[in-house]
Length: 328
View 1 (cartoon, helix red, strand yellow):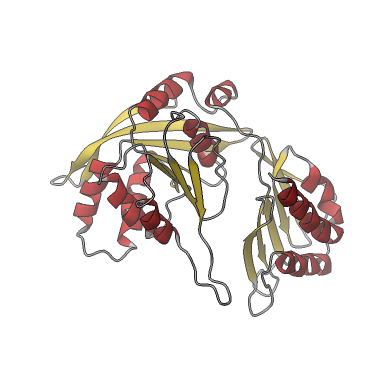
View 2 (cartoon, one colour; view 1 turned 45 degrees about the horizontal axis):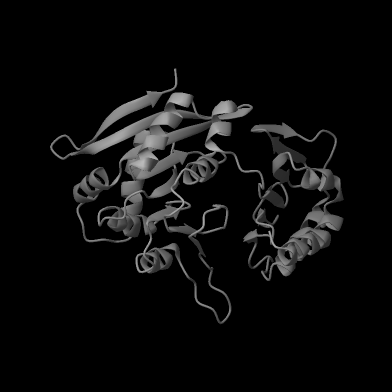
C-alpha cells in the first residue's frame, strides 16, 4: 500500500469509527477478518475461521444509520430509503455491505470483510492444515504444466487465499493479467497487470468483467487470474480456456467439486449464447483440467476434494473426472 493510499484509508476509517465505537476494537484488531452487525441486536466477528458473538455489545440503530450514510459519502456512494443497499470497498481494500432497516426487518445490517494484508505461502497453507502436502505436490505440478484450474467453495472457505498462494508458484518470467470485481488478489511478480471492474456511475459507464476479459486477450497474457466466476463472464473465460490460454486460475462458489462444473456451465448459459447445454458442458470438459474444493470448518479451512477433468461424456450426460484427492 502506498503512503497516499494508506493515508486515504486511515482518513476514511476516521470518518466511520466515531459512529461504530462499540466495535472499534474489532475494526482495529488485525486478527479479525469479518465483523457482522445484526441491527441493534447482536454483533459477531470471525477470528481464525471461527465465528463468535461479541458478548454484551450492541450498536444503536441510529448510530448504524449515521455510519451507513457516512460510509457511503466517504466512498462517493449513496444509501437511502430509495437505495437501501450498499456494497462497496474502502480504500484499504476492506469490503462493506449495508442493508438499511427499511428492508432489513431486524434493523440495519452491516458486514465488514477486512482486507487481509497477511498472505499465506503454499507451504504455510500446508502447515496450518488447509492444504495436505500431497495435494500441494499435485497442484505445484499442475501449475508447472499450465493446467487450467477452478477453485471452488463457500464464502470464506479460503478460495482466494489458495489462488494467491498458487500464483506465487508461477515462474517469474510470465506475464499475468489479474481480473477482479473487487481488488483482493495481490501477486508480487515482475510482470503483472491488475484490472478491476467498475460499476456504473454518474457520467461514467460500467466496465464489466466481460469487458476486461475481452481486453485481456489483447494484452498478451501468459496466464489469466480471474477472481471469481459468477455470471456471464464464464462464457468469455471458457473461450479463453479453449483458445490456447492455458494456466488460467479462477474461483467460484459451489458446495462440491462436481457442482462447480455444473455451476460453471450454468454461468456460461447466463451469457445468452446460442449453444446447446451439452455443447457448453463438452467445452468445459475440454478446457478445464482441475477442480479444487475447499470448506470452512470451525477454526480452519480445508481442501476437501481435488478432481482432474478428463472430458465430457455426452451419451451419459456427465463429466469424466478422476478423484485425485478426497478428505477422509
